Length: 195
Image 1 (cartoon, rainbow, N blue to C red):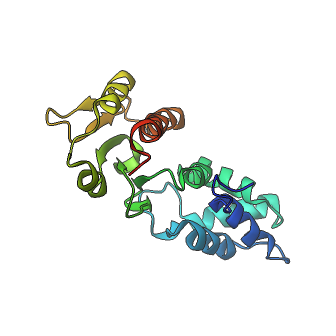
Image 2 (image 1 turned 90 degrees about the vertical axis):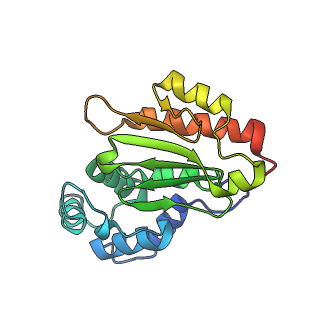
């Protein structure tokens, strides 16, 4: 297992932490493992439909306290719209992700940033300062702009960002998020992996 560098993924690190609680996990253990591994505080995340600790406690009551990391991550995604498995898979992809009013992933040498608005109804994508420093351009690459336009994004005239707002007013579906991320990963792999 692990990522391409042979390192443990964040999902695997979370699983290992949860397994270490031999008596079974509590809501505090789950909250702490998310904070320790993914570096964000679920309890301070705004706009969640239900208080995180209460939802996790209800889930544990229903399932018992011997649940797997995968089961917990699935519940977190279904209940709060935070896909921890997807965040784990993005580690090392050089994409910063801002969602739920906080940076979910952000590293100094990330090339592009994905910024979702309140309720994940809209998303903006723009190059990072690091990308601009390395390439001398604050514009999104034309191949990325074309990919985004084909997905339904609008791009600024100055090519500094692309924007999508779900016309239904619903959160952008995971499949759409996946297509967006895959477009970015493809462009990074083909044109910018040397940066």
